[in-house]
Image (cartoon, rainbow, N blue to C red):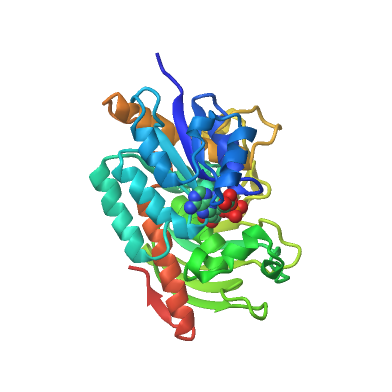
Length: 387
Ligand code: NAD
């Protein structure tokens, strides 16, 4: 009989943002239960979170290293199957490395590491460990994004000429990091965030979405990053020209100082025969544009979506007209990640459709993207190769 996978978490303490999203999403489909965690950098707050979540106090840890030791000391049928890492970026690598080397599967937040060197190291560690590693680029979990990817794959667009992708936000228009706003404070600190601010935080989502839908790889970037807010230490806006393989060209911009914008992730893909348009804030619709014809609106939950894209059908829970969004997209990555763990635990072949979740290779791409945009911008917006 199939059992629930046992989830542990590092990060996601009181007042944290994304940890709670992971907890809700992982448990959405009933196949995962949260049983342990080191939830906060502050041991007292970790304990507080454990109590709020009704986690056994013996499995609410004050430090992630203790969590590894104590979980390893448990019988295999009690121990966590995987850990979700939802800490600021500087902790991703050491925590992922230690859990993988101790024999645990890992789901990790993005950007994956602090630089390319760490990312490549982590890729080696994942390979050696033979464990499952998932990266939470959640936007690839939306049914209509999967539909878009499959339309491209099935050749509906023909050759892709141009890709425009954007991720504007406005929440950092004021220097709220100086007032101690938790999420802003570490995101604008190079020691915790990495070499890029806005471009690492959300530019990587745009990069990942463009490569996922089109199947193309960014080859070269010409980037102009700016820190508009005086005294801020990392970029809060970035505009890039992009050259993909197979001759496609594009634009990618991300911003955290664009007043009025919330989470305006959107993408336009222009092919020789058709074009696609998708907006994260209206995720249940995919616009398909044809030459000399009216714009089509494909709507999530209709049978024609599942008929066109098995992955989109599988990623759909509710009938049409009842919106699905952010939490469900996270949950879709968890479903595929968990099914992959289950198949490996049972020594069975993984169903290829379950392998549709972001992995360590996507994390390496993300870190190469950050390295390339920072380098290009420092050189006065010169073209830089993304190897
Ligand atoms: P946050 O500041 O709200 O929460 C971070 C939590 O991690 C805090 O509870 C903090 O105490 C805890 N923490 C820090 N170091 C720790 C350690 N060594 N051990 C245990 N706990 C520790 O941050 P956030 O906004 O939730 O972002 C966390 C991560 O999630 C970042 O990497 C960010 O880029 C990513 N994120 C991803 C998405 C997405 O859409 N995929 C959205 C938001 C954030």
